[in-house]
Image (tube, rainbow, N blue to C red):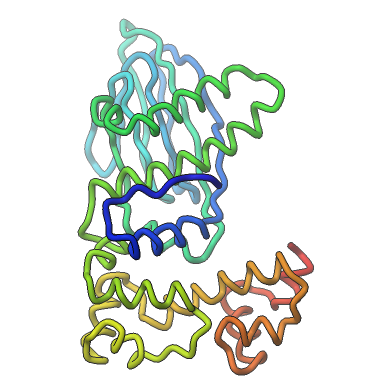
Length: 290
């Protein structure tokens, strides 16, 4: 997935974010883009996928978290999985509504690190959206491609949705700096440790070793790391190693025992045990399936 990481962080932090975004396995598409004549309502309950809506024409109301937001043309909302909400318009005298709706799924176990950096929903008004021209253009292209129904449009829409997700993460990271991976990378000491483990996840890492890179005490590092990322150091490291393992399993013919050693496990049995716990299948089964 081609993209340019443009966060205003020092270069090492950019490399960590780039590595995280590059490892995303996100899929998505548009499932609705059409005119609606009031009165109408679209309820969403217990959705296991992230949703997004772009109001292109007309007006409607977004009901979420016990509140109501009036949406105008050009307003955009992105919602995390399982965030109940509804869109509606009950004024028969209001103009037709042109609404673009889509979804995203997150297939990689590491993506909750990113999702923790986003709130339950992101509402971007038209004037704010226009401050991110590449995001605005992608939404326009996505809408036009879906409505065209031209040959190959379905594939194009799916790919544009994936690009949209990455761009949205970049845009919201530009607005927020107090949670998750963003906050961790703004902590200079934790950022040094993250940079080191992303550069070499297969190294024999210990909390003491990572704390030394961060110039912190063992207990202080472990506590600060978990406070910022809501994952222990070893949970984070395990997920990073599993991503490297999945890549090697699907792109090479390297034996499983050698992959285990390469990603930091001294015993292939312990590697298989951890892999199966996280993925529900053995490395060999995963390789055969993928």
